[in-house]
Every structure is written in structure tokens, then in C-alpha cells.
View (cartoon, rainbow, N blue to C red):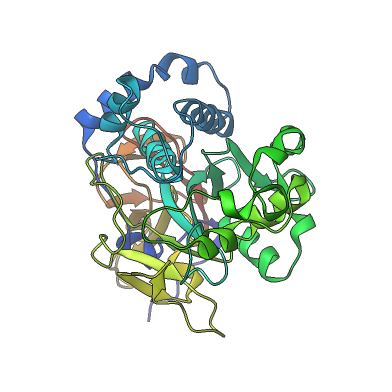
Length: 385
């Protein structure tokens, strides 16, 4: 047995590639991505905005301002270019569905991983108005997924101003901690909250009832109280349950219940049974109470290594060779930027050979997307004596 090695691991900071990453699919579609970027007219302005989070908020605001809101008419297509064309020629007005699919595609066009979430009120198996659609965007600045509501042009924060993820909102709602969820546009919403229909500012007999529903179902969908407090509590309760879309392309059909082919992921708390219908419509989902299928890191690099084969007869200077194995969790991956001690490498393959030197060695790896978005940096430091 060869006992000549006095190697010591000094630092090992990386993020293992999550298994759940494989179950999400973001199409590349470079030509369509470019067309969407050009159609937004945002490329130059975003380039002048320093932080990625501020860029995300600019995209949120831009999508919010595209259209007025309406609640029932479906767009014939949810593809970004089709939605933009429909808005331009006046044939499409957005629901929360169109707002969110549009924002998800705009984020993706500019290299920001984003997901569409269908959030649901309690007892969402019956009635109507029990669901809402928002977006989950990955923030490199906060190193987590953050909920964005393009219909309302807002996000949620804790008391210290930190943006919240869907589970951070969900857990607060389930624990009846509504005051711990702050709406980013709270000041404006306090002024305009009375415009939202509630039972105490709406006439039951005057309700316009959509085909297929009853007046009682529509009435039940309204929050009990008007004003900001009533509106805010009812809006936050949408995060009681949720589904995640996992297949993304810039070409997509209109939203039809049960049309996902089972690729959507429905999260339910493990102590309860999930509803198998939504507003009396069938569902085609994969059901899970495993949070790791939803709450996982992306835009990260994993580092593993294997020492070269050697025997006691191998000269010691020839035994410092290692194979470094690299994996990433970055949609639209372009390359790894690797620094091995004083040498910078641009690497597209998953394995590289490194000759360690005596004493201290640093291997620093950053994934970079095709659009130049940099992910989080992983570090391996080894001392060799």
C-alpha cells in the first residue's frame, strides 16, 4: 500500500447537481430566443442595469404593462411572439395565465431560468376563481427561486425586504402567518384595493355569471372583505397549494386543463390527500410531497475528482495528476470557466486532467450560459506535500 501522500482538503465549496434538475426541460431554440429579445426592445436597457435582480424586476414591469387584465378569455396561443402579436393588433388581452407565460419566456430569452406556477386556494376542487398563475425565477443574487406576479407587478418579501420563494410563502400561509408576507407594492395596493371585488362591496344579484358556473360559486370565489387587509389575505392564500410546469418552449398551445400530459408537478403537504380535480375539471399531474423536486439550486457547478493510478514505484512528481469531473445545473449551458492555480481555461467537456503542484492548489469553476450569464462559483483547494 502506497502511504506517501500527505494531501489535505482545505476547501470544498460546490453544489451537487440535483436529480430533480433532469425532470425539467427548457428548450434551447436560439432563433426564437433572439426574436423574443428583439421583440421586447429591452436588450440595451437591461445591459445598462447593474444587478441581475434589478434586470428581473424590469422584465416583470415590462410584461405587466403589456396588457390590461381580464379573467376569462383564453389566448389562442401562449407562445411569446404570438402573445405580443395579439396584444399589438388588439386581439388578445391577458389573464394571469398569459401574463405569467409571457414573463417566463421573456426571462428565459434573456438567460434567466424561470418556471410557471399554478397556485391554488383551499377547496380549489370546486367553484371558480380558486386559482392564479405566477412565475418562479431563479435569482443568482439571492441564490434561490423567487415568486413574481406579473399580473400585479409585484413580488413578496419578508419583514427585512428579502424576496420570498413559493415554499417560504406557502409555509407562512399554512401557519396563518399572513403578516410575515409583505407585498412589494403594498403602498399602491392600499390605495387601490377597493377596486377588487369582495362580498361586502358587490351585489349578489348583479354578478355576471360565466357559462358553466352558478351564482353561488362565483359569490364563494370572492373574498369576504374589501379593502387592503381583506384583499391581501385572500391573495396570499393562493399559495395554499400549487403546481409547477416542467416543460418549456417558446412554442406552446393555449392553456387547457389537463393538457400537460402529466408533466406538471403538483405539490401537496404529506399529511393530507391532494385534490384530483381543479374547479371541477380533471387534472393530469404528477403528485409529490417531496420538496426537493421543486426547491433545488440551479446555475451551479459540481466538482468531483479521481487521482491517477499509481504504485509505490511511480515517481512522486508523477502522482499528482487528477481527473476533475464537472457537472452543472444550468439551463442553456455554454461552458465552464475554470481557474487552475494561475491558469484560466474555457472548458466545454465534463472532464479535465489537472497536474497538482506542491503545496497549495486552487481549482475554481464557474458555469457560464450561452448568453454569458454567470452562475455560482465552486471551489476546490488542496494542499499537496
